[in-house]
Amino acid sequence: MAQLHRPTKKSDKRNMTMKLKTLRRPGVGDLSCMFQNATTVSEAHLSYAEEAGLDSLLGLVDHEHPRVRGLAEQALGCLDRDDGEVNMSEEGFQALAEMLGYKNLRAQVDAVWSMAVMAGHNEATHHTIIDAVSWSTILRRAQSNTIPDLQHAAATLIANLSLSDDLQEMIVEDGLDFLKELARDTSELRIKRAVCNLLANLAANEEHVPAVCADGGLKLIISFLDTKDPELVNAALHALANIANVSGMREQIIRDGGLEPILEYLTSANVMVQKGSAMAIANLTQSSANHKPMIEAGTVERLCQLARRTKNEEVQYRVACALNALATEQEHKAAVKDRGAVDALKFLVRVRDEDVKAEAIEALAKLGIHARSKKDKEKEKAEREKAERERLEREQREREEREAAEREAAERARLEREKREREEREREEARRQEEEARRKREEEERRRREQEEAERRRKQEEEERRRREKEEADRLAREQAEREALERERAAAANAGMSEKERLKAERKAAMEERKRKMYERNLEAEKKMLDRERIEREAREQRGLK
Image (cartoon, rainbow, N blue to C red; front, side, top):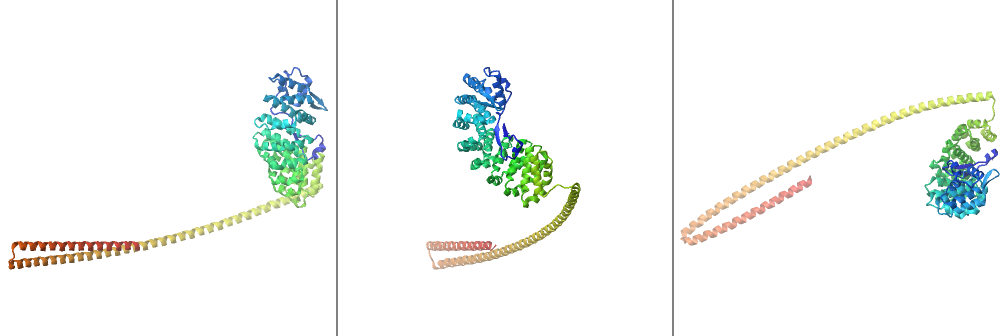
């Protein structure tokens, strides 16, 4: 469980950075059941282990491997108390380090967790842990991607080691990039929490803020606010608060979209989350370039709500500091006052904490608000009530005028719409009538052409009929003339006394000539009919083309 490394004195509220540490392994149960197997460990050492939350170490006393049990009892025997804090000697950490050489996963995980918890309780153990285990060994355990439990324990140990300023440079140079990438890639929230605690602790040192924010580190921290996980959100808020304590990073946090989620957590029921978000807002307000976007985002309103709701003095102090900073610039004073800052600051003036009062009084003075007599207050109240009535009347009047204007605009729009629809109907009717007239004209023209075509065909048929009758009459006349000629020839032959044989020969010759003549006439007639039919079909095609 991540806990805030709190200052011990009230005056330390002015410190604008915080560190985070893990004091107990998640999922701690009742430790008393583990004591019965620790037969060689004194009651005093068992009480030290219980006080320090070393449930992982006590669990190893019951391990199936006798060497692991012996090492666990050795480590427990190295516990003592120094200046009120539980400590472990180097021999104890060497026993834990030896467990890391065993293949047994439980022994490794519990050993790392024991070191992590000790590092969280007592910073004096940090160098002893590094000397006994080595930094490279700890980092390799953090790189155990296939063993999330071991990776989580190692990441938590590194986060707690980062509480020591003189170890931070080593962590930044040989581990920070990997841990940021780990937090970005892993789906394990518990590992993200540990890494975010590390980032918060490193960001408490201004020297390491650029490394923390580099390569997407700042956006990574801001993205943790979307998880809604209380511990991870708390760590991210404190990390952002520490980063915002560096003047060059305050505007960057807002540019990267960090303001809105920070404001959202001002209303959290979790006090630690409230503290982190309030500290981050207070630090962001230290840059005058941030005042305008923060005021526009509703920061003043949310701070005023928090001021009336919270009972935590540290949160109250951060709220007072933020409002005091926002009231500094002359161009923003009116906006700060209009958003209710005066009433909230007056509320903070009445709290017990002197630091909160001092900040609130200074902010009120910047806004031109000073102590007034009861008569002045009543007058001011009457003026406010009058102004409020006038505002309400003005708003009512403006609303009525706006509604009347909207009704008038709606009526004009309705009339315009009806006019357009009527004109459209008229145009449509005109188009319909024009189309109907066009169709009638085309129909009449079609009927006229059909009538003309029918009349033309009738005339052609009549002419053809007359021609055929004339040809038939001509043919009959020719046949009659031929018969008469034949008769005359026969008569002439008879008169000339021709023999019967010669007569028959002459008749056959005449009959053959007659057949040739008729065949020629039939061929000639067929050719004429074919030409006439082609002429009629050609004229019909031309008529269809005209249509």
